[in-house]
Image 1 (cartoon, rainbow, N blue to C red):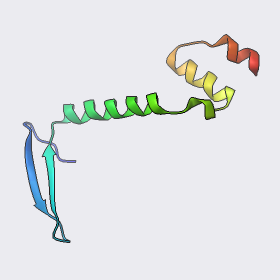
Image 2: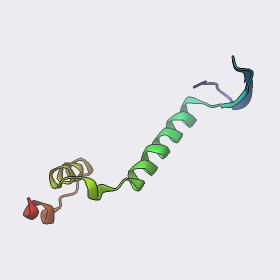
Image 3: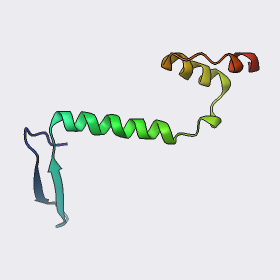
Length: 73
């Protein structure tokens, strides 16, 4: 990752001769994009594959209690 105060594009020639293009971003943009990516990953995850105990733990982290899961233990 390349950090810079203002956004701009950078082109570089790799060892194998390919041209690599990358947009330089600020640390705030990097943080925002990372959080966006993680959030999207959480949305797409198939939680049905997890055990009841793990689902209860996730609920605790989120601050949500699922009494229905407690009954299934």
